[in-house]
Amino acid sequence: MSFWREASSVILLTKSSNMKNVCRDPFKILCIKRSEIISYLPNYTVFPGGTTEKSDSSPEWTNIIPDCTNSNLNLNIIGNSGSPAIKFVSDNEEGSIPKCLSLRVTAIRETFEESGILLCKKVNCGQSENCATVNHLEIDSIDRWRKLVQKNASNFINLCNENNCYPDVGALHLWSNWLTPPLLKTKFDTKFFLAFIESSVNASPDGVETSQMTWSTPDEMLSRFVNGDEKLVTPQYYELLRLKQFTSFTKLTNFACTRSNEGCEQVLPMVIVTKDGYLTLLPGDGKFNNSEKYLEVQYELDKHLQDFDSDVMHRLHHTEEYLPKKIIIKNYIPKCGHILPATLPDCKI
Image 1 (cartoon, helix red, strand yellow):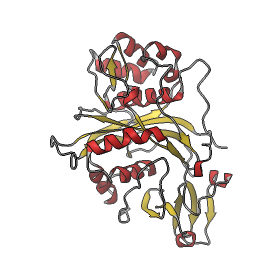
Image 2: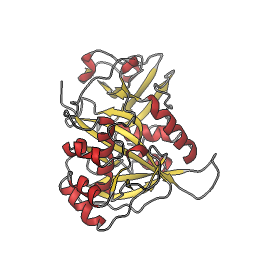
Image 3: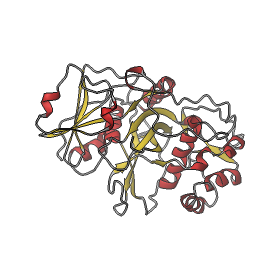
């Protein structure tokens, strides 16, 4: 089996207006454009996040995060058709904090490194844990701390100790779990969390991994992608289509807080190369193979995309560069109380 690296990401949302209409209070998402000088996904637009570091699961967090060892934060991942999820990454070392916490620490640390937004709370701040929303914490010498954490992830522990604060893990709501398909050389097992911040915070690129930061609506991001003005990989494209179904920050917050208790489905796309393009099958599709075959790319160069049509379809067509071109949903019901993605016309790429 090929090697997947563990990663964690935050889809950070904020209100896009001051309107107090729960039926129509639109939201924006923090979008990060990756630098053109890096080797992995240069110039692609992503959500903040990155790979886990050993310090993210350090037992030192038990003395920093309140009630750390007794946390009931959910990290329930199910496999295809309700079967147990396949384990692609190793467990945390004995004595470390559990992954339901460490992956949230990773997501918060990476968000700070990439954007300068610090999703932390002051100790004894009086706010309850597992809150629906999160805040950016202003601390002294924040730029210096950001550079220190970028240099060494364990400095995030020092940041919290010296500033009497802790990562607001209770405000990150489990949303999805995507694995990089076997077609690509660099592979990640990424847990995506939703976090809600009441008002937008000035975010700044780090100048190394990230080159641009914007707060955009799902429609704005998808429009730029469809028109060929922006690059998205499959998880970002799919999740934006899901978020496009919501027109209300308040309703999305309520949905995410409640739904996260049900966990999410592990998504390892199954890639088929056909005569007229790449076909990516997702769990639940009638042609999705639950055997170990989906750990390899299947070459069916004598067949067309339409030869794989099925009564139940949960799939994407891709370009030769493996950019998502079209999503196809037919008779598919999402697991874990999730919502179906919207559909769009073919992308102009």
